[in-house]
View: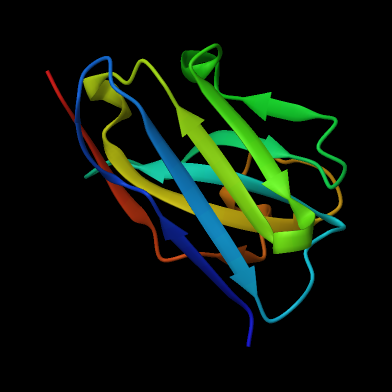
Length: 123
């Protein structure tokens, strides 16, 4: 069974940092694009970041550029999101996701999803 499990969320003050992890099981995701979306209460799921299979190409939501860094370890079937200089507007449930082929802005194009991990940034 394919499963993605996020961890690393929590409560942090503005300006602080968190590192999210997503461990995949059930299949090898080496050839897949991996990424992160987030969803705040009452809002649509929003693209945050993606990374291609080689790790050589990444994409970021404009508002997180320079603050967030995505990385992956294919040997561990794991994707990470290092979040620095966190702002209250980053508060959301963060979901990891995977799809074959290249990156996409659209949540509907992704095949696998984790259950999410809560990130709360206080002012």
